Amino acid sequence: MGAASSRRLRSVGGPFFIRIRHPGRADAMLPSPTRRPSPAWKP
Figure 1 (tube, rainbow, N blue to C red):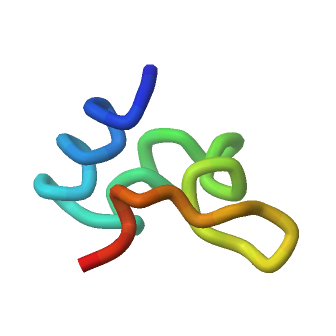
Figure 2: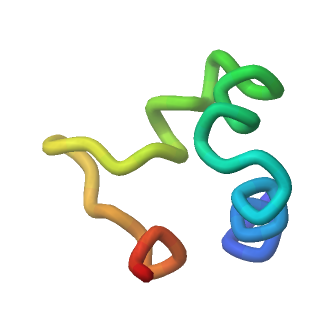
């Protein structure tokens, strides 16, 4: 898993899709105050 995988999931269903597919990794993939948002999430 990596940036390419996240981008592909994002293009398919966005953060909601990631949450449904990886409920345990949603916090790690979605930007949060304690984590540095990845460039993939920037428009």
